Every structure is written in C-alpha cells, then in structure tokens.
Length: 161
Image (cartoon, rainbow, N blue to C red):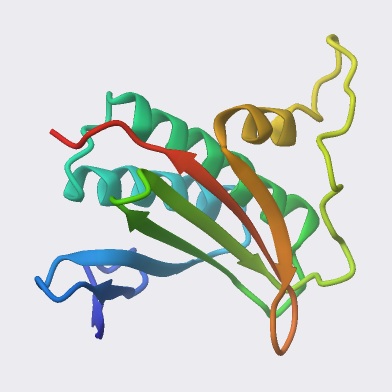
C-alpha cells in the first residue's frame, strides 16, 4: 500500500510501502539535486531508521547515513540533469538483516564504475564509492525507465532495539 504524507512545508511527500502489519517496509521521497537536497535525504534516512527501531547513534543507522550521504552527493554532483529531480528509497528487510538504499537520478549516461576507483590518500575526493564498498554487502546500479539510473547499496543491520 502506498501512502503520501508531508511532515512539514520544507519536506516533499514521502511514500511508504507497508507490510501486512501496517508497518512501513520501504520509504521513498524526492530530494532536490543540490547539496542541501542531499543533506535532507541523509537526515530523512536517519529518521526512517529511527522509525524502524535503529537509533541515530546505532552502527546500522550511522552506516546507512554515510552510504546515503555518499550516493546522494554523487547523484547531485554527477547525475544532475536540469529539470529533473532525484529520489531516495530505503527498504528494510528484517529477515535478511539488510537495508536497501536506492538513489535515482536522471543521468543515464553517467554510470558509476564497476568497482571503487583507486584514490590518492591526499586527494580531496574519490573516496565515496570506496566507503560504500566497505559498508555495503553489495552495491551496483540499474537503468531507470523512462530516464536515468538507480544506484543501490545493501547495508547490514544489527538487531533493532
């Protein structure tokens, strides 16, 4: 079941997929293709994790926040197409002990590398996918219809409190 809710005037509507129990198992929201939008998406992910029982200071929430921050920053920096926004989706699979993070943008031609690129330790950038690779059990990308791509990562969780 999909529902749309707005939490404040600054936030876009959030869609939720719910389990038979009525609890959300996946949440989706648009975010602006800007640094502020990426920051919003990261904060929203932490709030969703807290709603699922993972406090902001938990390892799972911190790992999800870091991966969301990297993927949304990459979407803003490399995937922005004028006139198109970005979207974040988090899905909780309690049985598998995973949170699936999906970040959609409109730039289909700008694909992430198959593996994290080697970086210079003194470089100012280039570590984002390396961090994603370390924190996620797997990650990748898929084409998005009608336009764009979805970059995804699956981050392990510890038992919810």
